[in-house]
Length: 291
Image 1 (cartoon, helix red, strand yellow):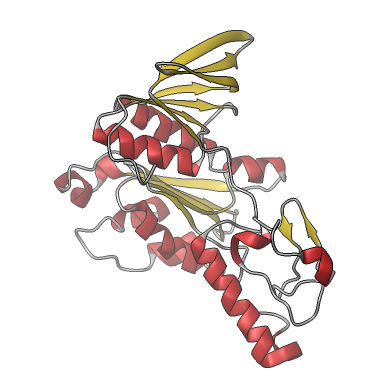
Image 2 (cartoon, one colour; image 1 turned 90 degrees about the vertical axis):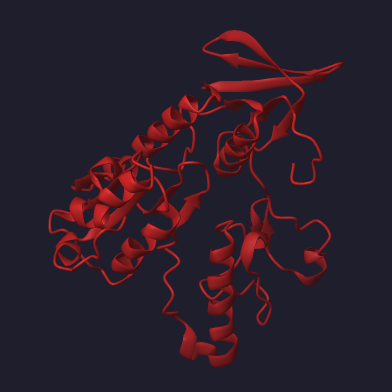
C-alpha cells in the first residue's frame, strides 16, 4: 500500500483495527471509495467502545463505508476484485479495484532456528520473562518478535528493560518502566488515543469507577482550529485515581501523555484539576473533564 503509484478508485479493507483504519482514512482523503469489512461488532475491538463508535461515525461522515459483524469468506479477481462476506446470516459482497488484508500481524520466528538453541516460543512469539530474557539466560527478545505488544514505543521500552538487566543483573530485577501503562494511538482523522483500562474491561472486572468527560466543541482552541469534533474521557476509581483515559480528536496522540504520566505516578483527577493549564490550548479539554 505504501508503494502504490496510483490511487485505487475503490478500496476494500478487510480488518477494522488500527492499521486498517489508518489506511482507510489515508485513502479516503486521497479520494478512494473505501469499504471496511470488520469481523467484530465494532471497529477497534481493543479500544473503548464509546470511542470506537464515535470514530466510526466520524469516518462514515467522511464517506467511508463500514460493514461490521461481517466475516470475509472469499476474494475473487477478474477485471475487478470481489470480496464476499457474511453479515447477520446474509451473504453479501463488495466490488473493489484493490483489497487490503489488515487482519493482524504475527511474530516472524520461522527462520531463527529457535529449536536449535532451545529457546521457548509459541505461535504468538518468543517467550520472555519480565526482564525480556528468553528461556536461555543471556539471550533477550524485544519488540514484535515476543508478541507482547506490537508497538514501536513498547519495543523501545522493552529494549531499555533488557539493557538494565544486562548491565545490572539481579539488581535490575524490577525495572522502573511499567509496561502496564502504554499509550496507543490511531492516526486517523480525527485521531484516537488511549491508555489503561476501557469501560468494558472495568465493568467485566467488577471495578467501580466514574467517567469524566469533556468535548472538543467546548474548547476555544479546537474551535479556532476547525477541529471541534472530539471527546476526552477519563476513567477513575471512586477516590479519583486514574484507571484509564480515552481521547478522540485533534492531537489525541499528543494529549494522551499527560494522562499516561499521571497514571504512572498513581495520580488522580483532582491532581489535574489543581494544575493550571495554558489558555487557549487543547490540554484544557483534559482540565475541563477533571473538573
